[in-house]
Image (tube, rainbow, N blue to C red; front, side, top):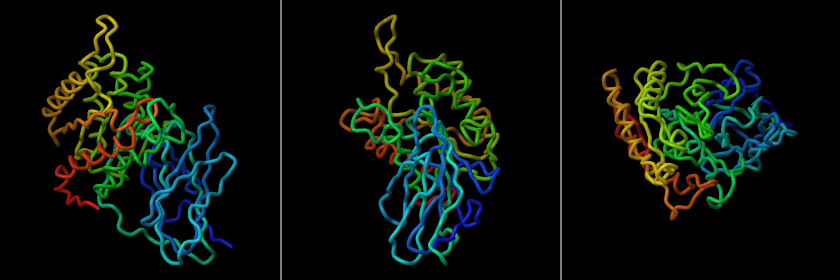
Length: 358
């Protein structure tokens, strides 16, 4: 016998963006969306559903139980009950369910969980005091970071946002993490060179496929970290005026929701002056130099608007010695390095908020 606790139970903690219009069937899509609970007993079963999509991709989840190493599992469209823990020592346990895959995968519905008969959910202890929110592309999604090498093609099994630089930095700083990211998407144009929609059009949504807007005052971050531009520069650098204007508009959007938030702009580890190649000269565009220049212009514009200065961090670029993820995206080793350096960069910026390491 088991005891069922519905998705709207007050002791369930949701981290990220969730569609709660039906409070007993909570829907979510963004990477690193998390559901956390503390419970008594020796086992736990989650009720999760996803609808098959045309690309035959399924969501993967990470499970963090107490102080154990994370495990993972894949959703099955024909299955609704997933054993997350069993044969535990009697007593209290804390479990966090984390969506590894990104927002264009099937939307997931969480209906609740089962515990052993007579066992209970209890309030979460030691809630992190701060929150980081990321707006990014495939790098922030952890695209292909579980692949063996750069020649490997992307698959749902190799994407792990829980091991992205964003999630790693948040754990280093004892912060909740919210990631709003989509592979192939940029600020002014996407990898496929389309210009509608871009991340600037979608980051305010609860779900990727639904126009429902997020209630921004429910989870206010201490910092918003923007890592966009890699796809904008993928074929040729965008015009300075276009890119700088769009970047300023995005920051203004962010500040319209979070007036006092610290904003950090990242230059990602794929950016360099060795790609892409200018077909007219057969020489590479100076993409990295231009990205630095564009962000300096953004900083200058934002100084005139007041508020917290915009900070810029250039992440250490990827190199063959650290390996590559699928399609030559950052590897797990690269994410570890970039996550640590981002945490080191953010720590002094957030000291005034009594930010503490875990």
